[in-house]
Amino acid sequence: MADRRTFIKKSTLSLFSTLIGMEMVYGKYLPAGMVPIALYDADLPGKSSEMKVLNDRPINAETPAHLLDPSITPRELFFVRNNGIPPSKVDVENWTLTIEGESAREKKTYTLQELKSRFKEVTLKLTLECGGNGRSEFNPPAKGNQWSTGAVGCAEWTGVRLRDVLNDVGFKNDAVYVGYYGADIHLSGDPSKQSISRGVPMKKALEPESLIALQMNGEDLPELNGYPLRLVFGGYPASCSGKWLNRLVIRNKEHDGNKMGGQSYRVPCKPVAPGTKVADEDMCIIEDMPVKSIITYPKTGAMITQGQQLPIRGHAWTSAPRISQVEYSIDFGKSWNRCIVKAGDNRYAWQDFNASVTFPERGYYEVWAKATDDRGATQPIILPGWNPKGYLNNACHRIAVKVV
Ligand SMILES: Nc1nc2c(c(=O)[nH]1)N[C@H]1C(S)=C(S)[C@@H](COP(=O)(O)O)O[C@H]1N2
Ligand SMILES: [Mo]
Image (tube, rainbow, N blue to C red; front, side, top):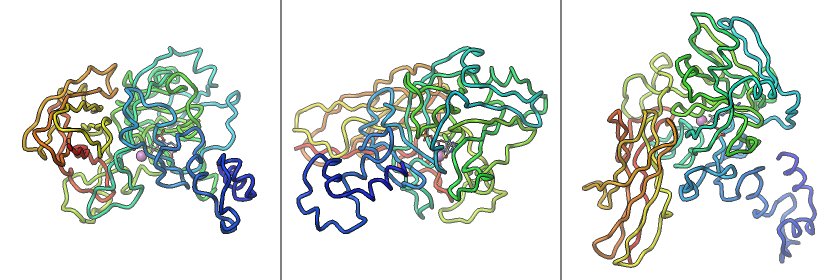
């Protein structure tokens, strides 16, 4: 991608026109070094130009709500959250995954071919959501990517169970955590530093849905989503799902890689007032993600004529076994009606919901959706508890509808 940008910056006007597919009428006035904005859009390899790019170094891009409408998020629309620079050349033939650590019985290294041939292949539909999804709504604001609603997606991941591989290596009784390392490069360029190196407690690593994935929606992983190998943990913040995976460490203590400590991916252990400074030792690691939902049809701002029924659709997800109900409101939460909710394909797959909505008269409405899971947890209407880094915003999603 960097190559492409340098290439574009050095391009001539006629090349710009060729890339755009049209004559640049006032092209000769384009200031030197400036790239036509039309060429910026298509700049993420393997991704749709409709993705909303929040940052390009590192690349962070979210999916507009209405493009999350399919039950399975398409590869080119799956959000990207990078902390560093993806590896520029991936040699799949020689890619290996090494497993070691003080609680590993031995050190073992597997090629991709060995992973595929030695362990049972599984395909699961798993929802990944960045812990910071919804951050932009917190007040006082939290630093970091200002995600609105689109740092989430649900894909079909094919790979092998992490627990099968951990059992093959063998681990001691004192094993408590599995940490990951990936081949992406720290923003500083320093090869001794990791952009991020997180992980999960042993109990999560050993769940049957915890995967080392080689494929997304039946094809190789997209390069920005971890090609050729990544972890996938549904129900936990997506930061645990290491991309470009080449090493795992079985630890006898909580993993201490980059972004495990301090305030990263942590929330105050006890609720605090908005704006409170919280000491590191009073911050707790995020594990289970909260119940949440998104309305994917219609697109916010939809207009319908009075008397028409409006079909609405979306998805709901949770770290609990399942979603028990989804409701919608057209009167700012004064009353709620039930949606039809489909069963999930497996635990941690999002569940599709739909309803048919009627509006009493012309005017401006908002449709709100609220999911409840079978642990009894439900979504807050406005905002959940404020926290310094702006994580875990599972407030009800709202869309605007005009009845004319
Ligand atoms: N190696 C590596 N793994 C990583 C990251 C990263 O920057 N490098 N980002 C993490 C974070 S914070 C998130 S939210 C998810 C995003 O996964 P996606 O880009 O495939 O949507 O990957 C996680 N795994
Ligand atoms: Mo994240």
